[in-house]
Length: 121
Image (cartoon, rainbow, N blue to C red):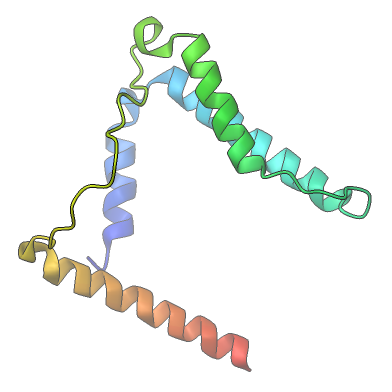
């Protein structure tokens, strides 16, 4: 809804004690690596001929690290399990969420419209 952001923050702070320390540290380390490498890319973009897709490399590295460290059994963290093969058949979304989608979509449309007006000037 309109105040959804505040509900999200309230939920996060109410459940702060249920955060897994291992997952938090891995997430913070990933954010630090992303920020540092992005800054280094900006600083040395004249000297670097090819820009690495840092996000993809970090995703692969953390996936390999989680697999090698056996995070699922050692720390009880949920690691991606079996991924189904193929593309699921198309189906229509449930109609009971239509009102929520329209409300959220309207907010996004207003922000997008305001941003395009700002850029046009």
